[in-house]
Length: 50
Image (tube, rainbow, N blue to C red; front, side):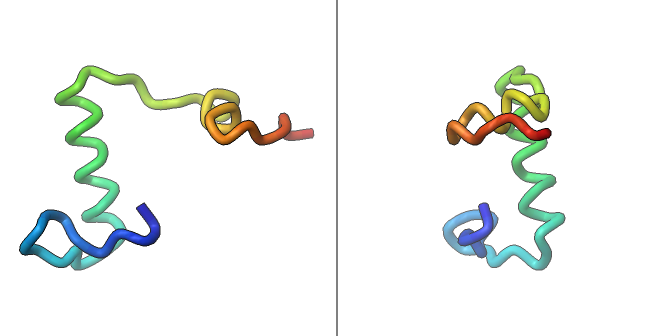
């Protein structure tokens, strides 16, 4: 998301919060759970935190 500046093809995101809000809406619409810290670290294969 950090390189994204648009909410859709025609709308610039006014804030980062607007981008996060959009992801939350998609997550709920797709019935997906929020990743835990361990799950989020495993996605890009990061080592476990100390």
